[in-house]
Length: 364
Image 1 (cartoon, helix red, strand yellow):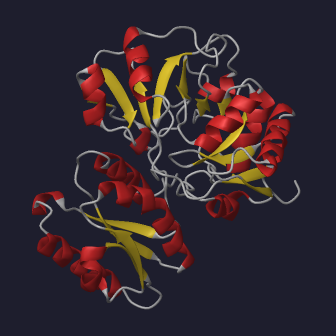
Image 2 (tube, helix red, strand yellow):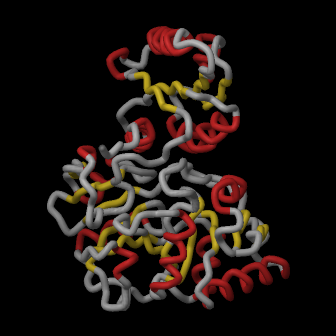
Image 3 (cartoon, one colour):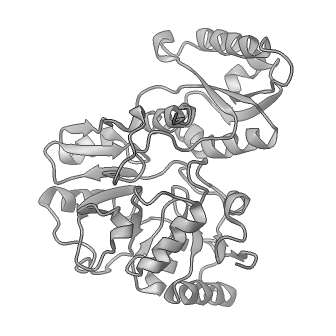
């Protein structure tokens, strides 16, 4: 494939002639079975026509994504779901009304025209309506549902800018729409609303607290077998693989919950984590995802990413993947990162970091 096209399209310039040409270019690529990365409010997605099995297979090939990992389908407001979804429960409909457009993916019984490659052969398809104006305009203009996992190489930190997309996929996809940095920085929450209580397969930008306000009791999915190295035939949901979102460096996570988030204790733990790794000897380069309050505690590190204010979980989420990618560019061999509080979007942050820190499975 030739070099990937970079197509600027700001959410503030959607009405001008240049924007119209970009929209036409993207929809033409999708209609001929091509792949285009585009911004959503969560991360950049790599999109193709969800009803075209070969087009979706091209996503898997570009990302080097295994066939057992299903993808999410993005739709526009008002697009009939009949071909995509077989039925919608009352609970699912209530969640749609509360959170769509937005960063909530619902697992729904798949319709007759959804190819197996989209769902990894499973009976449910993940569907959401993105809130980002660029994503909404592109999908609406295409007039088709767009299958779109994150626009990165499989297992790498998700992309929150067009530059991140090109780091991984330049020359492997047709185009990327550059709409600037994404808003939330972590992926959508994935929910199966057909169960009672509803099951959250992946915590994300819609928090458990917000879900409980609409659907009552919520249960978090607990993986079985994946961490033990079993080769799955098809994951039950996007985003539940045991190792994901990972930088090239080894992740070292520092727990803060027992410290009650007391800044002095958290800083002390980060200081000692950096010191311990530095003692490992030559060739070690320590990077730190450092909240502003703890930069002085980790000054012995080789690379420090200013992550944001420790108490501002939204800001930490927005900058998470950008920080992991930047520390990779600094050739860190280890990345030290404090684990945020287990509340609100902090649950999504912990989920991403814990998966990033899992060592790849080695088969004997």
